[in-house]
Length: 370
Image (cartoon, rainbow, N blue to C red; front, side):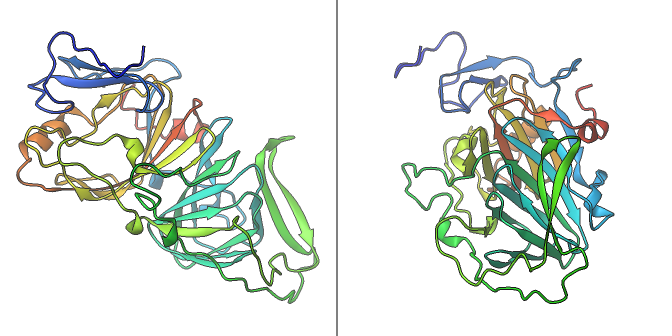
């Protein structure tokens, strides 16, 4: 049972996640690192397994995937993973949308991996650049106009994304909401109305064999001249994220929480000073996060001199061991005095319900656990 007293049995180090003496620390925890937990000290790497069955980790590279919108301006993003609470999609758009769009199942978060451009929304225009998060409220009408080919990781919730409640550090750490960019209204004139009217594509879960519905207007859908309230789109760049760190222990992923919806938690793992106390493990420990599926999207950077694979999308089902390979851990210990920073940029998504990989994700799996 949960208590203020934690037990120790057998061979254990003096400090958590430090001075392992060749053992592998493996966390068996509940409720995403904040519930009851047990750290098991093993002789062998728990991720060294071969998987047979539907619940296996998958790893895909974004550049190997071909979303419809990468070749057809009227195309849609590519579905990668889904459950009842969210869908995770990939977009790679180079041409302006020939329509406007609304995601009507819930709020939408888009992370800009590459590219730049502009969003025209009912609330006004927003420019975007690499590292930008783009928040779009449920059923907000918008249109994307890329300046350069743009790769987005998209999270479409079936609920609303919210800023997490303030913790012991207060309201501005790690996510300072005063750093968001908010649009100014600018109404569009009707201009030359298309023959069929202005098209607004409603994006939704599959209904009657289709994932979209189209509405047609005889006036411009972005005709808003003003707005007020607390429900609006914005952008936020990860360069403005206030990363929290520690000298003595590698902090749990939930410290880096950015936004959350029902059953969906989004985190930013970003450059920061590395743990500096001798013997401290600098890489996340092995774990199986038994209550959440995990997705890691590698934006870039390096880990103690080893480049991160940009665009790699890694999915670990709940209950299945995952973590950096033992070679990476050994290098981090060997290079302890050589590197004083962690320079990675990784976007993480945890989901309470099990995620279902799409046929596209399965077809492009690198097969590291087969």
